[in-house]
Length: 316
Image (cartoon, rainbow, N blue to C red; front, side):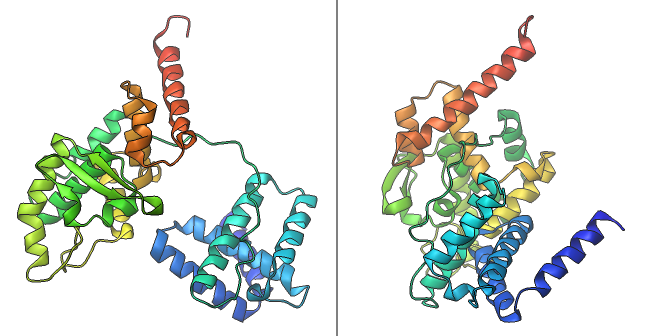
């Protein structure tokens, strides 16, 4: 029996032990998560397993997921710790629970979010992944035709890498946020905090191409405030940009598994630091409320220096 066949049978057995009504609730929430966040298949499968495990635990107490109280979740976490589950595994489990209950609370399907006061297990800080400058250049330079879709994608990738925007900030930019005369973007970030971000000459060139050639074609007579729109004139979504970026990475010969909108943002920050940018200035550009969030990028820069030393120094 193959490993894949064994996994499928185990998943089927796990699902059989969870009530159908619970599975319907879980799958409905996962569908919303996919639509809103563009989670990968593996992430959705992990969330599903986590929520089914919680459902089985709660069924021993004659409860369903939507009946869970904070004490139930605390007991479940305590049980997992006793069973030897790692902090990383428990952190992911809590993330799954938070995603589920926050959506349920937002849609008024439960009275209270039982995860509201639960603390995430402490994890060692991981270093964000960044692409090399040559990989970024390859992604930027590939598929550069004159088709509207090609101009749109080149513009969006250039703008994201030049400005370090979050993908939500990119797709939610209104046309009024663009100041081509000064080469600036007015970005509304997390917590409704506004910041001004320079876009650079190359990104501005492609933005002007998009504004003059593509957007009028797509929008037509519609009244749309969003900067980036699809061929039907409607605002582009995070998911459509995410998929287009993956395809562009394949065309560029870059492993699409390591390419994402957030990796572009990480690359923006890392490359600026590598070229001598000030940490405080980078904090402002990224829209971080705390400098500690920005300092993690210094670790990437240090790792890059170590690799360079090992590769080029005679005693590396």
